[in-house]
Length: 103
Length: 243
Image (cartoon, rainbow over all chains, first blue to last red; front, side, top):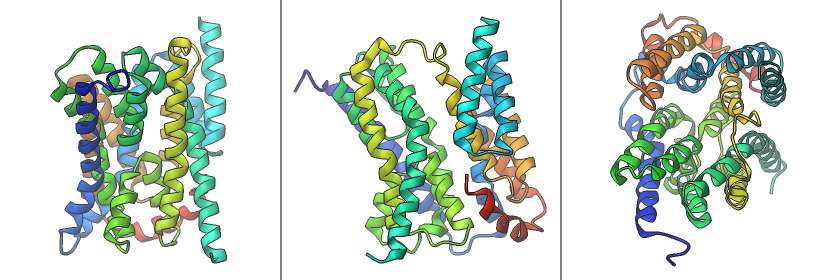
């Protein structure tokens, strides 16, 4: 048993898993307790995808260095026309090229 | 099995596979980083199987290495995953018709892409069924778990993520998801507010709080802006959602 799992690590993983599951059900439990959802709250919920997912992109675009900023700019232009997989492929080619050229 | 159900399974599997491909480098990376930081392959696999949330898993194993207090590791995992609270609130109306256990199991699989795909499907006027959710979720979950184990065996063979260019893949992937929602009401002001908010919060407060604080900025903007034109804007999304 000890060679596969360590007790303290196991406990941290278990607690982390429970904490994560609570975040996954928490919003549902909270919002369904409300009798009627006001239009402003509905507008707020409607903005969740763009609002949250943007925070996973924007900081990288300004703190990741020139190579990352330029790559994300190219990916943005590509993304206005094409889907996610071509964005990934072209973005990867651009960043590898930039790193090769800039060094 | 009805042809409609087959079609649902096919759609979910196709979308799930695309997500699995995009997430694959990170599953391998996680497995490798975990083993480098002293976890066993079994522990890395258990983490992928029970947390199933990439960014928080990477944060977690980074902290394991620094001998941080256990409660702080758990708190960090919770902070990184806090955005799921917003996700499950946002999709509540789409999954309300499911039974208790169907909700309990499908919400376990709620990740960034699972959330984005669920919103898109509901936007295009299709009822989100249990079978569709589970096929979508499991076609990401199973590869995620298997690739974690493979990454664990590869260990330090992976090297620096920057050198092989995979550090930009996750931001690009999330950017693609953000663009997929661009026909929604007030999309641009929301994106600008949460973008600026997250950058400022990263500078003045620090990671991982910039995610929740930046998201809050965007959500507040959406809540205070005029409500007009919302219905017309959400209808146009069917075509964009095909990405």
